[in-house]
Image (cartoon, rainbow, N blue to C red; front, side, top):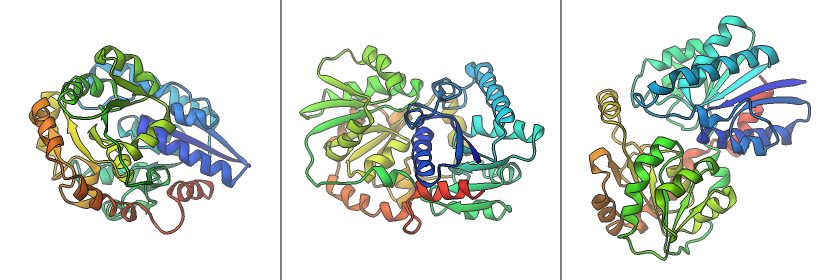
Length: 357
């Protein structure tokens, strides 16, 4: 029996992990799967070692107060892997968590194979991570076609598998209503920072309805921050997917949601705000023109980006009112072919690699 261990440290990885698990189950019955994941992976029929909301922390300075707590979960994961001794471990994104786990397991059991999914953005900053990753992992799977070259040169077996978002998100219709979506991020700190700005901006934007698609564990926090009966909160994955296909506009935090919205054909503006120290460090080290995945992949400013001091109520309202939605839609249609590799769906391609490892 094949034994596979899958680790996803945050919601975007949980989405990827759930699709991979479904593909594995559809391919083989002779497999044992253990997970560290979130709601979506749990819904696929597996119990997670712990709730990943405890380790889904972004930023640099933002992580410091949580270091001891995260360390506890790293140790628990390492001990569980050593106990289960899988044939292969798949770590998904979350380098701050996954790389520590991999390094510690390697020291205790060199016979377990490690594969990582979602390449660190070495093309954007800290290029030295590519060499370190090559020493740590047996194989890397990338979501984007321009990434393998940065790792292959260091001797790391690297495969472009495509992005599983193409399997779920697509533009089913050109008919769009005037619903405004507010997506302030998947991490608690992101929500607390961005949502008040998004809500105040939405009050000045003409629309029939305002909806906040979010994760179940963030609902209570959002309800406290919003305190407005006119704004609806949605945490059902199926309903969120349909909203992406039908909404007239979205104000979204930089992250995986931007890609999902673009594949769904939803016009958007992207916003982000970090602590001043974290932003200074990132800006000092970064070597990239854009922060949103859509703009990075297409290599042009298709989606307006409002970052740090530019992320204000006034600038959001101005950007929404002056957005060329038809031009965005045209560019969004060119995105899908950059996120697939051949005719095999990305999740199935990943499952095949794991089952044959």
